[in-house]
Length: 269
Image 1 (tube, rainbow, N blue to C red):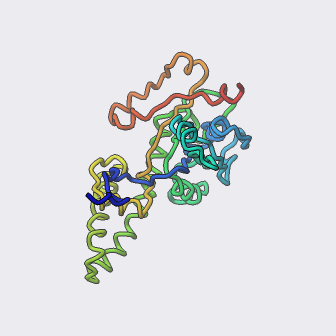
Image 2: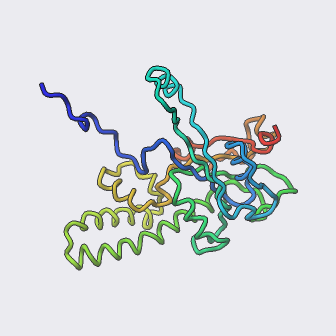
């Protein structure tokens, strides 16, 4: 029997996004929720973290090695001339505000920084501190999460319209059969994102061709998201917060990606 070709074997399942050993994740949230402090803790950096909105304008970025026992074992076994582990590029993105998709608070620039990332750390504030201002005037993590969700959603809706218009002109009116499948896929995306108001990542039955089109356009709501709840020291120790995020029962897929953190004490330590 002839040997198998290099490309033979089981293909990995299609994913929205990309495979790689140097992926990029952006820290996203409203101003003054602890993004830069979390960035400093995670990357051992010294980025400015001040008590005023838009302390960060240009994104801070740092590379963090990803621990992997398999990598260490393989290096011991194969003894390569050089060792290059997997890295995660962490980006501290300036705070988004309501109306960011329309350019409020330099929103278009900040949203473009998110577009360049492979995933999102969505950081929300759940601690009370009169010395730290809040752009919305009060601490309400549920409201703040929904503000960010809405801005990402509206930016995707804004992107989808021109894409479909261009494809319709060429594929439907122009008769380009090669682009007709992409047009049909984008109409399906429009139905999900614009008509049903759902993030791209919440639809779990995209096929290979559809994922190929989604990866071409880098929609903000297609990116995997991990929610980080920044608690006070007291709430973190109790593992409890008065909000309790009961609202998340409406969407179990969101609930599974929630983690509590406490950036203030971590930074001081």
